[in-house]
Length: 398
Ligand code: FEO
Figure (tube, rainbow, N blue to C red):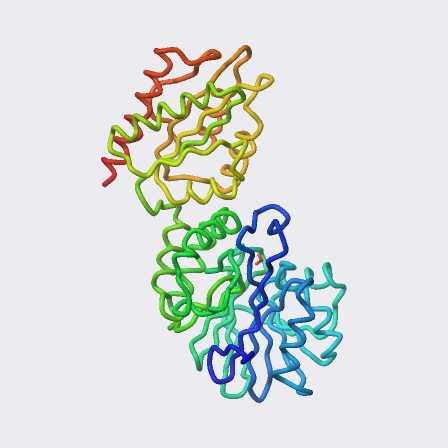
């Protein structure tokens, strides 16, 4: 196969992972994921990031096909998470004179993960590195997604090597560039990737975006997902929105935790009332069944969120509690919130939801709706009031 190029001298070196079930051993990969690396061939040769360990052989072969016996001069490490740093040790073994380009936070991780202490070339904000006609400059992007993360800008082709930023779940099935593939496939996977992996770091992403706004960017080469060259505004706009915790559309995610269907009945009742109030995007999720990854992604998409839980041993039903922990860790905000619960014999579900909302400074709309065992007519009427208030908040926002 011909090598894929971003320009005459910049090669795409990505690999597709269709075997791993869980990214970071935590987030489902039904559509796989791509680990992207890039090679710039000039008077000096620079490799930008590597790939995950399990895909190293293909990766090394591709490099050899392009370079033959020519050595690599620099390995730029934008990000040390092992899905990108996994092949560093083998690269260093194969090219012992290589200089590893990173910042002061990169190198302790390089030593920690791989025991590598030699061959370091430290760069700081705005530093440049001339390869020949190509020149690289480096910008720190801490916490997008780890503290050492930086991005690298190549000024001749105006290519931004952006590490995890602007990346996506989903393999690259033939098409590599955004104009070679149907982006419909990636809409949800982009948001799921952002919300699951980077979502906690909205403020830091905002800072990185402000920094990048000073650069003229013609291509974005992320470490996952498509290379952006025709839809740069699209992906920049998405990142602006997501990192500000702004929803994409009007709609309500209803999440429930229910052991025997009584709390689920309240969720269905709320959904019907929302529909009567004119809300068209309504997604109900059973927290016991759907992985939090997908629920969180839809929470990032829609501006309404209603969560209900049964009580369980005096606290919240564990699958809902696990989701609340994740959302709290991600500092979820800017959502029209409703909560409901079922006290059964001990209570604790609604109480935990109330406390969670207070901690996140989210104000639950509507009255307290907490059934005792099976919801009665009064409980369901209270659920309707919550639905109406959330629907009104959404309508009044526009
Ligand atoms: Fe794709 Fe944070 O590594």
